[in-house]
Amino acid sequence: MKILIINGPNLNLLGLREPEIYGKQSYADLCAYCQSVCDGLSVGCEIFQSNHEGAIVDKIQEAYGCFDGIVINPAAYTHTGVAILDALKAVAIPATEVHLSAVSEREAFRRVSYAGMACKKAFTGLGFEGYRLAVEYLVGRSK
Ligand code: DQA
Image (cartoon, rainbow, N blue to C red; front, side):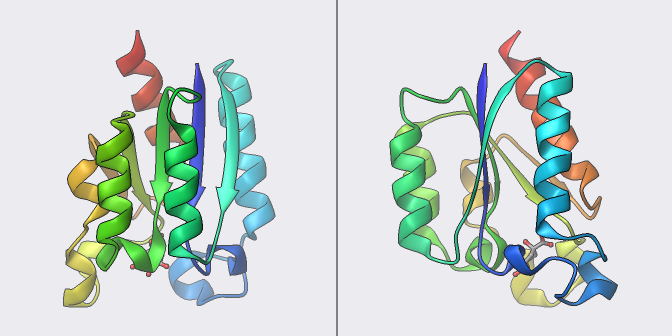
């Protein structure tokens, strides 16, 4: 099994960015965490981050036929990105949505998730742990 983990804009600034919301660990720490989760489950993974919506759409399209699951934190594009929703629907690869913060408890605009409409499940407000649960969910589904 191969999982693609996609992170959207500003997640590369983890640690620096609003640490009271997103925590003090860096993006490199998140990548190492995701890699160790996948290694522990003997799952292949690629981790991709972009600040550009089109690059994320391209990556989802390229995943067709190559990956068995997608874990996506579209960051701000969650709440605006219809193109990401359409790409996820187009490739129809089982996907899970992750947010480090509890989006439903923040500003009203964060309660809408376009990408989430194409995802099987969402893990929010659990920090890095959400990525582990998302990977485990996809692995469990594939059995
Ligand atoms: C986020 C939540 C989004 O609302 C925000 O725009 C982000 C990060 C999260 O992981 O909590 O950039 O996706």
